[in-house]
Length: 220
Ligand code: MD3
Ligand code: FE
Image 1: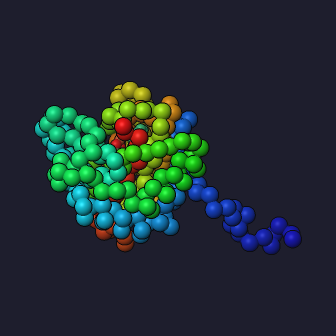
Image 2 (image 1 turned 180 degrees about the vertical axis):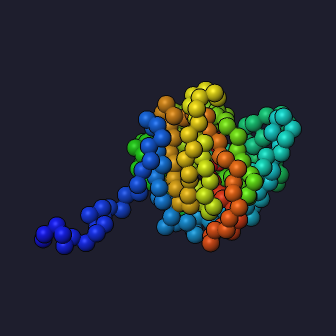
Image 3 (image 1 turned 90 degrees about the horizontal axis):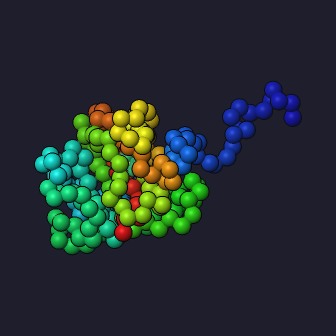
């Protein structure tokens, strides 16, 4: 058929999520989780029904502006004594709830899409941001095995992700993350400094005035 009769935009008809390359082994899969969005938000509700969101205290004594909970074998916790992974929720005195099926399936699909074989997460940290909440620049180094990647899923209100370098003073890029975006980081990018800029006000049809982010890790 003559090219001037081709319907516009159908020549890109693949179902692959568009990718933004952040580093040699760090990639944003735009919209990878949009279809499952409502199921994932419902699953967060189920997790929080067992282990509620709470604002933990960091070793310096400040309360985090981000609220968090966990699911899976191990959960990330902080208190005056430091950061660690723990099988018990300090607030309930019981194990963290199991990883919802929709979470686990998504984590496996995303790791595969980013070409990480043998990803066997045992921890899933769920963060909740209200407008004004932020996460200052940090590295994730409380995990035992830095050879396994981290898979992160963003839901609800958009945020500006801060992507730095291997040292705190390296320049920082700002990457917007939207509802349904999935990011996978591993290899040489696993210890990159990163953070989340102060969340702006907004309203999302599935999450209201919140942004959620859950991250799968191999912690133990
Ligand atoms: C890059 N959470 O919980 S997810 C965290 O949106 C955390 O809630 C942010 O940083 C959030 O630790 C960003 C992305 C993320 C998580 C871990 C990483 C990016 C990472 C580890 C290494 C490099
Ligand atoms: Fe982090």
